[in-house]
Image 1 (cartoon, rainbow, N blue to C red):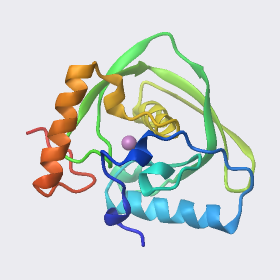
Image 2: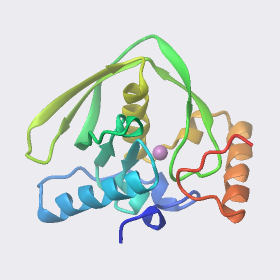
Image 3: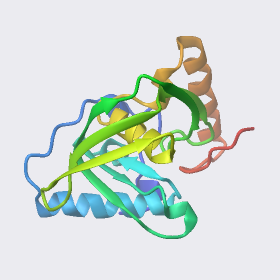
Length: 180
Ligand code: NI
């Protein structure tokens, strides 16, 4: 069932798993992409990775234009970073699986990503110094069991994880990234 209740929350162990590559674009893969897009829009997110709905396969959906009112969904199958810039930048990230917090994460400013689309064509995504560049890296991390808090030093990470736990107990839902 699609919707924000479908989204797996920290500390679910599925967020720490390496995801399997997709070898064939089956009707199940298409249905999963549809479901993930619905969940992402329902939670007002700009990206969602399959493990965040409990499916350990290399599938990501992204829409960085949704906030502007137009839907422009990307479905990335087996996405991989083929180039990344030397220069880095810190960006305040949120994650639908970590309601109630944002985290400052330092990443390369620009990346080039290759991925298959639902037609099986290999697509090239190039992004630099924008939300798409951050989102691509954040979502691809999820496919390898890495979440935004894993980029923090240990004590800071533990603090943020406690904050998430408290926020969830207090009723925070996916997409709520209060700075309080
Ligand atoms: Ni995330």
